[in-house]
Length: 121
Figure (tube, rainbow, N blue to C red):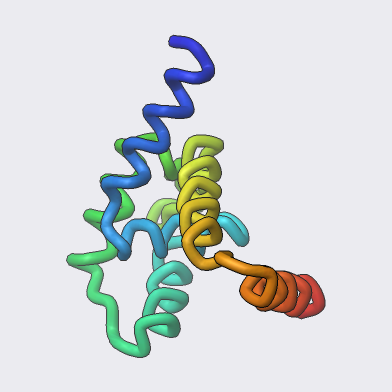
């Protein structure tokens, strides 16, 4: 498989993900995390409880799609980490969103401010 085919495949997969799955990928962009930490981040974002029956099947799907890697921290705790394919999926989504949002210089400035604020945090 060529690099171009691989990139197209990742993009196609990423565009079929649910918003919940995409949010998991974004959370894992920061650092590798165990399931409960991902759950807490999602609950903070949604301002609502995220149950295990929703989280873990979605994590398993992302692992199966090779967007997330699962490893064992100890006998009871798994760690999840974004793969290179997962990183490309996040970048594709960001590229699409930015392309839709930035329609003029004013909006480009808004985005620059947002990025600068994130880098200063």
